[in-house]
Amino acid sequence: MSANCPECDAEITLTKPMRGEIIVCPDCGVELEVTNENPLALELAPQEEEDWGE
Ligand SMILES: [Zn+2]
Image (cartoon, rainbow, N blue to C red; front, top):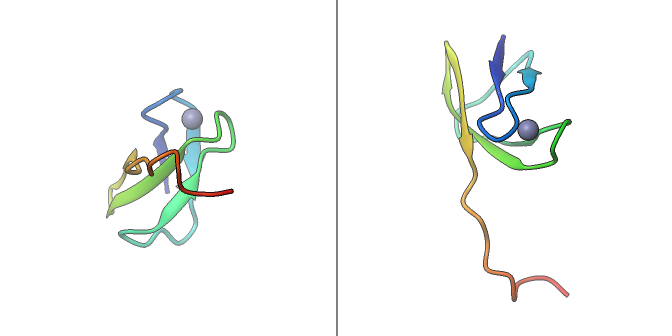
């Protein structure tokens, strides 16, 4: 099952997508959320505030 990255349009193939799963685009590194399993649909994951981390 595959879909295109909404950010860079790379084709991303997942063997067992799960709705709500967060994946990372292997091409541009953006985080994507699986919003539908069949057909596979991906959306940009919500960005966290920058003062997280460190
Ligand atoms: Zn991408």
